[in-house]
Length: 86
Image 1 (cartoon, rainbow, N blue to C red):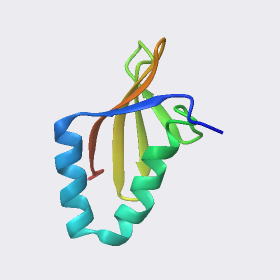
Image 2 (image 1 turned 90 degrees about the vertical axis):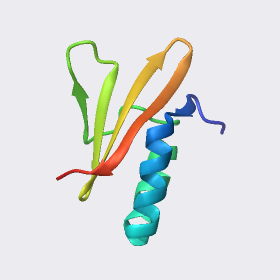
Image 3 (image 1 turned 180 degrees about the vertical axis):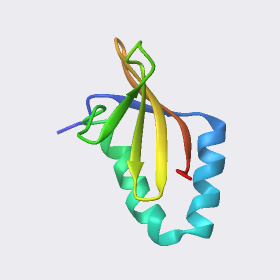
């Protein structure tokens, strides 16, 4: 089964994920697959809508968060920020 939504990355999200992977390799092993899973399910249980539009969402993964935007037409998940939740 192919992914329903395409994934796009903001440069800052890539930079922060690179830092995360170096500083917290065990956490990165959980965060990275969860991000790619958003292509199949962009509104998973445990994600939170940010603001009133419903476009922006946050997914907490332990001590880390992923902030992303969902567009249904065309189907796209844009990863905006990956970082510590504190």
